[in-house]
Image 1 (cartoon, rainbow, N blue to C red):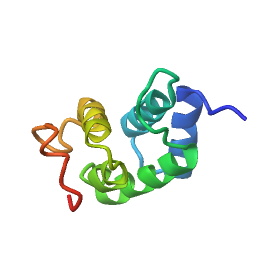
Image 2 (cartoon, rainbow, N blue to C red):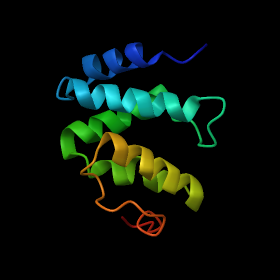
Image 3 (tube, one colour):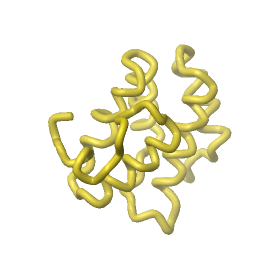
Amino acid sequence: VDYLNDTQEADLLQRRIPALTPHQADALAEIGAATRNRTSKLDPFSTREMLAVAQDLAAFGEQSLRYTMLSKIADQSKRAALATMLAGKFPGIIGNVTPESTNDKAF
């Protein structure tokens, strides 16, 4: 079974998590798709994982992405790449995005 495309995943996220804004749903779907791209060096986030991320985002705001997505990645370079991607879609998430700022497991 293939993953949903960006539009389908954004629609699913918004239907399942009504408090999610269209921008948030689109951004999460794009990030999920980017992690699943064959050329991506990032570990893919499944649709199920993206639903959990969306639930926390709707309930706790953008700062929750630091825990729900970044803390799951042990490799520093992969974490920094994802942090940069997240900051591009959610500019208020972590302020200055540097490898050092994404290196703290505690967030």
